[in-house]
Amino acid sequence: MKRILMIVGDFTEDYEVMVPFQALEMLEIQVDVVCPGKKKGDTILTAIHDFEGYQTYTEKVGHHFTLTASYEYLDLSEYDGLYLTGGRAPEYLRREKRVLDITKYFMELNLPVAAICHGIQILTAAGVIEGRTLTAYDAVGPEVTCAGGNYKRVEACDVVVDDNLVTSPAWPGHSNLLRAFIKLLGVTIIEVS
Image 1 (spheres, helix red, strand yellow):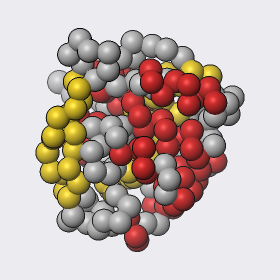
Image 2 (tube, rainbow, N blue to C red):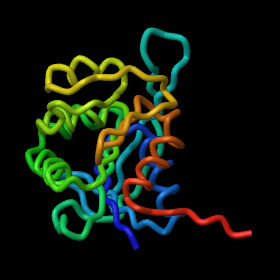
Image 3 (cartoon, rainbow, N blue to C red):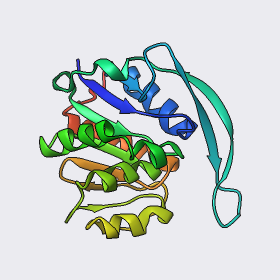
């Protein structure tokens, strides 16, 4: 069984934790969802972002999501990949040294890493994207460039894969992001009739 580490925080985008968590678990991939300063059984409050014709997304209160593992007791060698969610949480998660060290660990070992929307802010702060091609929510594009990455603007439903890293600009890209991520993990879905 594959095991994934997912890093979240209060006001992580609702779909960007709920959808991948449920989809990966459905594939019998264990997903340990953690948050700095919180332990297994604690909750985070999510935010729902929507595109309603304004110059930027709108934000509404989401749901309470129960963490499935404790941040304090992580053994990174037990994980096959890392999933970085978006929303507002990456704004402050990228200031946590351990979050950056965890991100560097997965990137330096060339393990599968998925990041969506503002989750790319953790990658830029960790200093792991120099020379890499990736996408993000469009407002994060300048950060990618400043961190030495090659920002590629794509439709919200698309992804960019660069070696072990798969990125998407927003939650409409979940299907493609998850498909590429499980491929990087070496998970094959067999159709049985």
